Amino acid sequence: MGRVYIPENGDFPLTADIVIIGGGIVGAAIAFFTSKAGMKTILLERRASLGSLTSAASSECFRAQFMLPEHIAMMKASIVMLESFADLIDTPGYDIGLHQPGYLFVTSAPDGKARLQARVERQRSLGLGDVELLTPPALQQSFPYVSPIATAATYRPGDGWFSVHEVTYGLAKGSTAQFLVETEARRILTDGPRIVGVKTSRGVVHADTLALAAGPFSRQVAQWIDVDLPLELFSQQEAMVHHHDAIPQDAPVTIDLDTAAFWRPEAGGGGMLSTGLKESSEKPVDPVPTDWTYPAIAIEAASRLSPFWLKVTHSLTRENVSVRAGQNDFTPDKKAIIGPYPHVKGLFLSVGHSGHGVMAALEAGRVLAALVSGKESDQQNPFSPRRFTEGWELTTEEMARQDETPFFSSKTAMTSPRQQSD
Image (cartoon, rainbow, N blue to C red; front, side, top):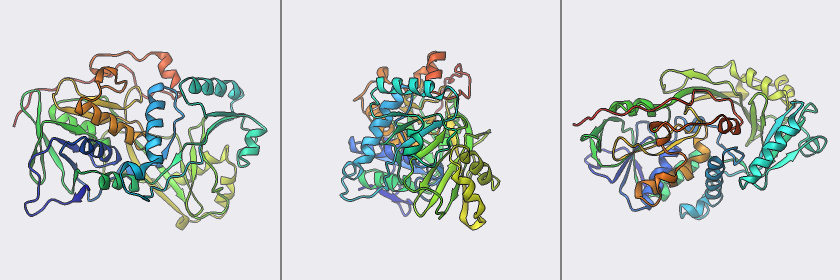
């Protein structure tokens, strides 16, 4: 069983096969799978608990409805593990609060039916056979809260949400790793172009393999050894409305494709709302400031295609609303960077999940552990860091298939590090 503790009184581990920087759900998944592969695994988290920064600010949702084959494959594999999580961690009855009412992507665009028909056909061709196209009146019959202005939707019943806290600590429980909290990584130690350890606020851990999974802090940490990752930070707010009878509790995660606004039910009658609004951030911050004007913005955006939210506003009180905020690290192509960094021996990355880290964490952790152990080759890895260091081109067609507006130029590249020793 894994151990989550503050190292004191001489129980600081001096050596490891692999050190992980970052104790969110992504880092915890890496720790689980590397320890299961027989590696002595140490995870470093500077906060007092695991999964308490970016992971805790997530909407906790997961979906397989993507447009690129590698995303669909990764999410499907993660969902299978979520569905059998108690078996995965060998803890019968372990409850992660799994809900699978589905994901509903809705549009009011005049050409919505044709556009979403093409989307569904592509997803089915990539192995997502249970995604459906819905049009009026069947759309409103199946989901009565959807506005009559909606022209089409896609729906997949196996999508949903879960408790990120329970999964993160379940991964720790099911591993043999050591999770050092209140232990801050302060320097990556190298000998020439290879990893030799990590200096922390409590001592030095000697290891020849390092996995960087520090979420919004990943670029800053990599710069300690002059590795400049192509990551840009965005902050995003989320509002929670608690205990309101007007919110349908059997609804799926509902996303307005035209505005990127989304909401989902929450236990006790609440609803979680977010929009496509993202604010660029120059630096990672902890904690991320919240904005109390956001609930009004989110409710207005959600009410466009889910008009019941207007009813919610009539009886809303400050005590019935909460706001939280987090930062996500985005890559130029909005695909995670997972795998070995080619210019530093022993440096592995699981960064740039572009807002999808919670839903991808389990398979991303499995993949990274397989790459570290040599069971899988980086040559067949579509998430490889090499796509930036070797200047892979992302075509316009590939961008379009993501069905999202790209934030950045696809020509951003990572720079090689200087040699550093300690």
